Length: 151
Ligand SMILES: [Zn+2]
Image 1 (cartoon, rainbow, N blue to C red):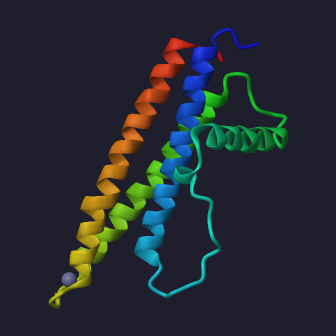
Image 2 (cartoon, rainbow, N blue to C red):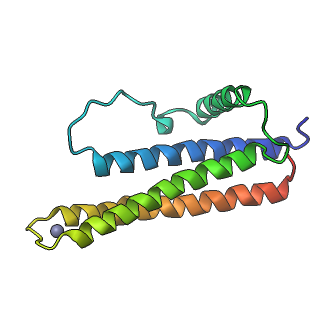
Protein backbone atom coordinates (compact mmCIF):
# COMPACT_ATOMS: atom_id res chain seq x y z
CA UNK A 1 0.00 0.00 0.00
CA UNK A 2 1.48 3.30 -1.07
CA UNK A 3 1.16 5.96 1.57
CA UNK A 4 3.05 8.63 -0.32
CA UNK A 5 1.58 9.28 -3.76
CA UNK A 6 4.04 12.12 -4.38
CA UNK A 7 6.96 9.79 -3.95
CA UNK A 8 5.58 7.15 -6.31
CA UNK A 9 5.15 9.87 -8.92
CA UNK A 10 8.74 10.83 -8.39
CA UNK A 11 9.71 7.21 -8.87
CA UNK A 12 7.83 7.08 -12.17
CA UNK A 13 9.58 10.20 -13.32
CA UNK A 14 12.95 8.65 -12.51
CA UNK A 15 11.95 5.43 -14.27
CA UNK A 16 11.18 7.43 -17.40
CA UNK A 17 14.53 9.19 -17.11
CA UNK A 18 16.26 5.83 -16.69
CA UNK A 19 14.61 4.56 -19.89
CA UNK A 20 15.73 7.66 -21.76
CA UNK A 21 19.22 7.15 -20.36
CA UNK A 22 19.26 3.55 -21.55
CA UNK A 23 18.24 4.70 -25.05
CA UNK A 24 21.02 7.24 -24.96
CA UNK A 25 23.55 4.54 -24.08
CA UNK A 26 22.17 2.36 -26.91
CA UNK A 27 22.55 5.26 -29.33
CA UNK A 28 26.15 5.84 -28.28
CA UNK A 29 27.00 2.14 -28.64
CA UNK A 30 25.39 2.21 -32.11
CA UNK A 31 27.31 5.37 -33.00
CA UNK A 32 30.59 3.66 -32.10
CA UNK A 33 29.99 0.25 -33.61
CA UNK A 34 27.60 0.59 -36.52
CA UNK A 35 30.05 1.28 -39.28
CA UNK A 36 28.60 -1.57 -41.26
CA UNK A 37 25.31 -0.06 -42.36
CA UNK A 38 23.13 -2.65 -40.72
CA UNK A 39 19.40 -2.46 -40.79
CA UNK A 40 17.92 -1.62 -37.48
CA UNK A 41 14.38 -2.28 -36.48
CA UNK A 42 12.63 0.99 -35.65
CA UNK A 43 12.79 1.58 -31.98
CA UNK A 44 10.39 3.31 -29.70
CA UNK A 45 11.54 6.78 -28.88
CA UNK A 46 10.72 7.51 -25.31
CA UNK A 47 11.40 11.18 -25.79
CA UNK A 48 8.50 11.36 -28.24
CA UNK A 49 5.98 9.90 -25.83
CA UNK A 50 4.03 12.04 -23.44
CA UNK A 51 5.18 11.69 -19.84
CA UNK A 52 2.01 9.81 -18.91
CA UNK A 53 2.36 7.39 -21.84
CA UNK A 54 5.99 6.79 -21.09
CA UNK A 55 5.26 6.22 -17.42
CA UNK A 56 2.50 3.71 -18.09
CA UNK A 57 4.73 1.80 -20.51
CA UNK A 58 7.50 1.72 -18.00
CA UNK A 59 5.14 0.38 -15.37
CA UNK A 60 3.80 -2.26 -17.76
CA UNK A 61 7.32 -3.36 -18.57
CA UNK A 62 8.32 -3.48 -14.95
CA UNK A 63 5.35 -5.54 -13.85
CA UNK A 64 5.90 -7.83 -16.83
CA UNK A 65 9.45 -8.25 -15.66
CA UNK A 66 8.47 -8.78 -12.04
CA UNK A 67 5.92 -11.41 -12.95
CA UNK A 68 8.80 -13.53 -14.22
CA UNK A 69 10.62 -13.28 -10.95
CA UNK A 70 8.93 -14.58 -7.86
CA UNK A 71 12.13 -14.86 -5.85
CA UNK A 72 12.97 -11.16 -5.50
CA UNK A 73 14.14 -10.44 -1.94
CA UNK A 74 12.17 -7.92 0.13
CA UNK A 75 14.84 -5.24 0.15
CA UNK A 76 14.99 -5.27 -3.65
CA UNK A 77 12.20 -2.83 -4.42
CA UNK A 78 11.57 -0.73 -7.53
CA UNK A 79 14.09 1.92 -6.49
CA UNK A 80 16.81 -0.65 -6.00
CA UNK A 81 16.01 -2.20 -9.38
CA UNK A 82 16.16 1.19 -10.99
CA UNK A 83 19.46 1.98 -9.36
CA UNK A 84 20.94 -1.33 -10.53
CA UNK A 85 19.70 -0.78 -14.09
CA UNK A 86 21.14 2.72 -14.31
CA UNK A 87 24.44 1.58 -12.82
CA UNK A 88 24.57 -1.26 -15.34
CA UNK A 89 24.10 1.08 -18.30
CA UNK A 90 26.60 3.49 -16.76
CA UNK A 91 29.14 0.66 -16.64
CA UNK A 92 28.46 -0.07 -20.32
CA UNK A 93 29.18 3.55 -21.06
CA UNK A 94 32.46 3.45 -19.17
CA UNK A 95 33.48 0.31 -21.06
CA UNK A 96 32.79 2.18 -24.29
CA UNK A 97 34.87 5.13 -23.10
CA UNK A 98 37.74 2.76 -22.28
CA UNK A 99 37.46 1.10 -25.65
CA UNK A 100 37.37 4.45 -27.42
CA UNK A 101 40.46 5.73 -25.63
CA UNK A 102 42.37 2.55 -26.37
CA UNK A 103 41.44 2.88 -30.06
CA UNK A 104 42.75 6.43 -30.13
CA UNK A 105 45.86 5.35 -28.23
CA UNK A 106 46.50 2.49 -30.62
CA UNK A 107 46.44 4.70 -33.70
CA UNK A 108 50.06 5.59 -34.40
CA UNK A 109 49.58 6.92 -37.91
CA UNK A 110 46.88 9.55 -37.70
CA UNK A 111 45.40 10.57 -40.98
CA UNK A 112 43.80 13.94 -41.74
CA UNK A 113 40.97 13.86 -40.97
CA UNK A 114 41.29 10.88 -38.67
CA UNK A 115 38.70 8.56 -37.15
CA UNK A 116 40.25 9.49 -33.79
CA UNK A 117 38.84 13.01 -34.11
CA UNK A 118 35.39 11.58 -34.57
CA UNK A 119 35.86 9.24 -31.61
CA UNK A 120 37.07 12.07 -29.41
CA UNK A 121 34.09 14.20 -30.30
CA UNK A 122 31.73 11.31 -29.44
CA UNK A 123 33.49 11.13 -26.08
CA UNK A 124 33.12 14.86 -25.41
CA UNK A 125 29.69 15.44 -26.85
CA UNK A 126 27.90 12.21 -26.03
CA UNK A 127 29.66 9.95 -23.55
CA UNK A 128 30.69 12.59 -21.05
CA UNK A 129 27.25 14.24 -20.80
CA UNK A 130 25.61 10.80 -20.56
CA UNK A 131 27.94 9.87 -17.70
CA UNK A 132 26.92 13.10 -15.97
CA UNK A 133 23.27 12.17 -16.43
CA UNK A 134 24.04 8.74 -15.01
CA UNK A 135 25.48 10.28 -11.86
CA UNK A 136 22.61 12.74 -11.47
CA UNK A 137 20.09 9.98 -11.95
CA UNK A 138 21.77 7.69 -9.42
CA UNK A 139 21.91 10.57 -6.93
CA UNK A 140 18.21 11.32 -7.47
CA UNK A 141 17.27 7.65 -6.95
CA UNK A 142 19.37 7.57 -3.81
CA UNK A 143 17.67 10.69 -2.53
CA UNK A 144 14.25 9.16 -3.16
CA UNK A 145 15.28 6.04 -1.26
CA UNK A 146 16.10 8.19 1.75
CA UNK A 147 12.90 10.19 1.49
CA UNK A 148 10.68 7.15 1.33
CA UNK A 149 12.62 4.12 2.52
CA UNK A 150 11.15 0.68 2.19
CA UNK A 151 8.80 1.36 -0.70
ZN1 LIG B 1 44.08 8.86 -35.51
